[in-house]
Image 1: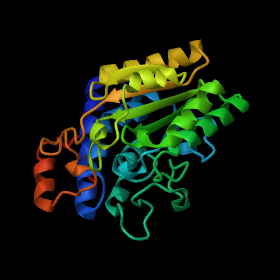
Image 2: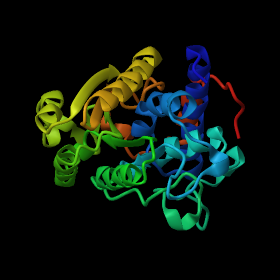
Image 3: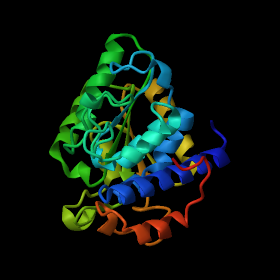
Image 4: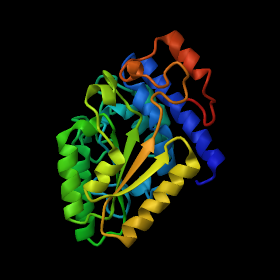
Length: 282
């Protein structure tokens, strides 16, 4: 799927899934899930080479995706279900005790699409670097993608992994930062500050692309350019996607208030009224 209008339809449904999941569970993280929806919709439904029917934990024969910011599991589960990894109806079990859709994706649940436990912030990039190196050793031409948050990028392990990946020329790795400038307690700059992210990743030896994370043409263009750079240069690629926390729901946008706060039923209804049902609710 590459038609922009079709991607917009999928993204609207994914946002509805997110709101319905966290409202029903009265638990979860809607803000970052909504800000990264367009990024992952474009990745799973247009860019990434993957087949739910031959998925394996070792990722052979497919591109691989790692979610580093594991708390935004609602968007992770929605794009996987809508891609065919498991029944869409299973989204109704989000965060229920004993189900496969726990608050953070974990491999012991045996859920297709989950390569590693996501939740301890800062670790996903390191795991993705290892997976990318393994593909190079196996002469596997496919790519490894990883999504992290900008607040998460205050973790030191991110930068250790960044140095390692550049040093070892891991050019089959495409990392993405959901650059919404919000985290649990305030703006990223208020909490700790990251300085100039574009210059910082460049200084760490990466190719860097900046794009609007809510414009599908820009998103798809960034993915295309990332692959071109990866083939031309022996460097990993970072795509800094500028986004809005809570995108798509007016009272959630641009604030950290909905980082980890579930809407009350009446707020959930207000949110759903702003999002078109396009593929059918579960």
